[in-house]
Figure (tube, one colour):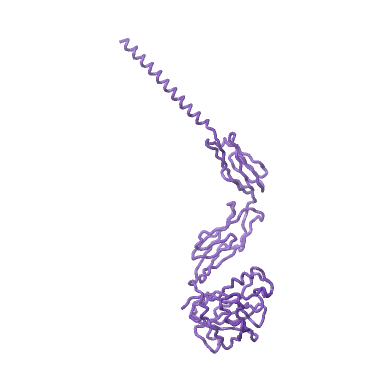
Length: 390
């Protein structure tokens, strides 16, 4: 019995030694693996971003990543080449001190990396003219209305970029100069903002559509129908009234010279229509010394319409559709003009018949009230008419 007990104790002692050996060896393996893992060295250090922009008095965080080793914030050491321009703390937060450019550096062990930091004068405001934050635009007879905002950064020396965006380009678009154009019915928010992300302003834009999209009326159907009292006669065989709708904006157009006082001319459209707008092009011949908005070009006029023709020439059967005045963009004195004036002459000016669009008509009568130089003659380079056939 005693021998059996001694044998059992011996077995227990052997098992305990084996267990201690195995446990000690396994722990050594764990320690070895852990040490090997911690001893892997980073071979590359990268800063996120090629260039950092920060405003004076503002802060941005710079991020750096060593590979393949994981990092702790305490493992990275940050510094600035010029603390008078940029300061950086040990968390990678850079703060603009003064306008300029310098480099911020980071060190991880034996690895280093640098990134350029540019400090700009931040915006404090964007001054808009006009100051409206709500505007209404129209798509009038298929023609989109536009609105121009002018803007200025405050302070004036701010180097932040100013951008314009529209929340719904199917309602309104905006250019990078603040030119808003209606597109379709609805509402949109136009935002102007600085690149620093701190300053922005919003403009609510509502767009309505008036009238159906018009078509250009067929000029081949137009027919001169001068009435008594029109006080009209062709200025010459080269400048007959038919030249106003010959489709050639570079021709001499049509012109009349007659007695002093209001002069008018009448023509048949050939079909019954609702008139949407009257598109007038002023005559010019720069090579001959005649600039736009000069000489006998029409400045003020009225447009009248009638469904049937009263050949007596009485105005009683006519409906006044529009009072029109040609606009010279530059506002320069007579015989002076600039590139904007030339472009406006090329583009022509549209006069919209929104108030009397529903009036059916077949005949148009144009009464000339004033020319640019007050001459007893008048001239029109070309007209185009748009509307809906009835």
